[in-house]
Amino acid sequence: MPESATSAAPLSGGDFDALAKAYGTPAYVYDLTRTEQAYTDLAAALPEGSRIYFSLKANPHPALVRHLGGLGACPEVSSAGELDAVLAAGRPAGDVLYTGPGKTSAELDRALSAGVRVLSAESFADLERIGAAAERHGVDVDCLLRVNAPDAAGGSGLRMTGTSSQFGFDYDRLVEGWPAFRPPARVTVRGFHFFPLTNARDETTLLGEMAQSVRCAAELSRRLGIPLELLDLGGGFAAPYAGPGTRPRYPALRAGLERVLDEHLPDTDRRPVLAFESGRYLVADCGTLLTTVVDVKESKGRMYAVLDAGINALGGLSATGRVLPADIGPDVTGMSGPERTADLVGPLCTPLDRLARRVRLDGLAPGDVLRVPNTGAYGLTASLLGFLSRPVAAEVVTVAGHVVEASRLTLVRTTEGEIQP
Ligand SMILES: *Cc1c(COP(=O)(O)O)cnc(C)c1O
Image 1 (cartoon, rainbow, N blue to C red):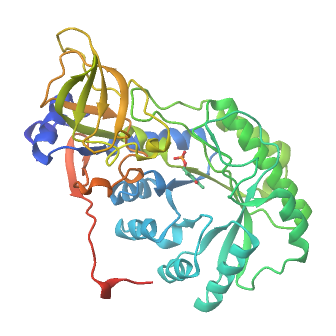
Image 2 (image 1 turned 135 degrees about the horizontal axis):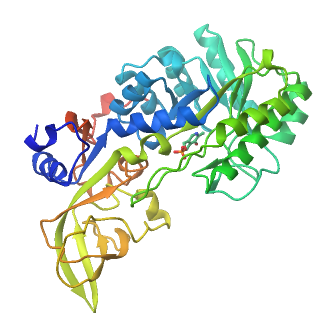
Image 3 (image 1 turned 90 degrees about the vertical axis):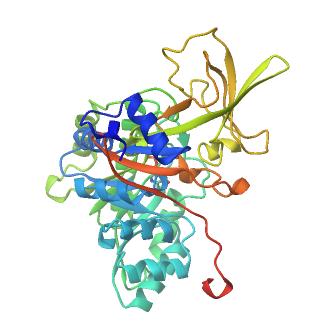
């Protein structure tokens, strides 16, 4: 463990430099102390007794799953690999909510034999496949029906429902189809699942969407005779991404939600367990990507800083058209020299490998280690890990300045005999 990383204080610039030296770059550093703070903040913003699901999509690192699990979060997974990460973290499959629009029969078999018993169903056919798998395994499972609610409240980050969507049952289709549908014998529908938006713009938007979901669930329960025991209102809790900034707080959300429940589900004895999901809010700000400047060069009046981390390590999703904010945040304070800007580019042989445009680069030189903050969510595993066949960035987990584990994912080619259908 690097000397300077052993203090109890949060990681300092010197600690990060020591970690870069010890583990090389690119490297992600995840500070579990911050994850814990995020969980505490989120729990405080939600009604008492709410269940919080951690969406592994944001970051499936087992240390995060284990730590959040220890605090009380349940895992929300959407693939066999995410389920493996839960098991590797020593968390029980019985706590898992299994979601996603393309659950195959083979995948369901694996999930049920691992002990998963709560799933979100995305369509009538999905519900039937879940039922058939439960039958094969001789087990009973609980399902939530994921609903694409009508006329959602308004502007947001990335809309997932409300309009045409590959996710969930359209409200109208569910209402039309349910009376004639025979739910599979081993499936009990316990309630509804909504996930109308991600990265909400503000607290009002968030509360508006959740209120709409509660209203919709109450109505569906009444119209279809489905008891409302578990109500997953999704999330949308925001966090900064790969740039400076802090997580928002939601000081009015708890009271707002309680008002909404009083209005739409007035019978307090028969209130459902409320569930919420979050990826980015819980883990975004625990992560810092360390990357080294390999080269600084000029081309026709424009500066380029070539880093050892590109879209193979960060922002792979941005290669589909989104470019990171220009304030990607190398910590340049204290650097001298004339103020200049440069594009931050990665080492991959494609002009798409650009992490940021026109970043201030006072005196930046090869060998400098940059710190990209707020990269704990949608960082490494949302990137193009296999492209250009570079080693995957190391991942270092710290608690109060101490390194507790370090590892590196690898892509391994198996032999033909090891390929499972
Ligand atoms: C992506 C996703 C999440 C997590 O979203 P965040 O914005 O990271 O909180 C939760 N639930 C579902 C169903 C998702 O698709």
